[in-house]
Image (spheres, rainbow, N blue to C red):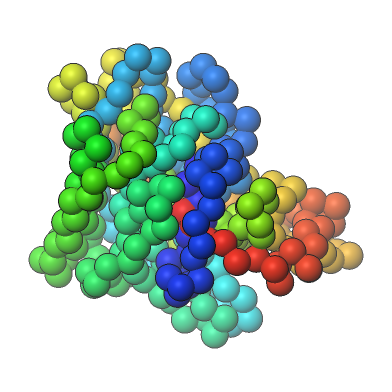
Length: 289
């Protein structure tokens, strides 16, 4: 789970949160053994994993989505590839991607970022606009992490090499995410998901630490399809009428396991589910992916 970190918010507002907490809320009911489908409060996409298999790299291409924004409320979404973070016991995640958010005035905000959990996420100056063709890759060797993001439309690239104290290479992911905010050291909740329409992941690939390269459907590892479903702890103001929330789900894999879409939708949340305390929203201060 690597949530928390809304890149549309100033970095000064981000405060480190215990990694175990961050990972604990990413996947709801993620099984100890490999499963074909699971639900998450903040992830939609695919993860690959297998006992005894570690990963060296993950990559994919996508087109920065065109968000639908309306004035009156903020929303957030991130598109990324990463290593680690799938298991509830994970303490780290290495990821790079783009974000498309809506501000309170209905303006679309796009940005590029990377995050090496438990460290806070960092934005960087690579230009990103809706419709731009992007390619991302994360490579880990020992404790050295290389994150790369290329804007193929504008012919601009970003590459950062960092030594990380904590590393998780037990899984690889291709994800659209609703970033989260933390109220305190023991409570984090997903933010409203931006209506991003749909995002197509293409050329999705990974390589194991032993050199095995393949797509999501490679028989050397198992895969989990992840559907984003708002949970009872979603940060919404309590109402007496039904509320709606953004959801997202991945399509079946095609092109040999290298291509899939994640599509935005809405779901009705009953008052009992959407009753998240107004006081909690006002206290929220911790933001991460």
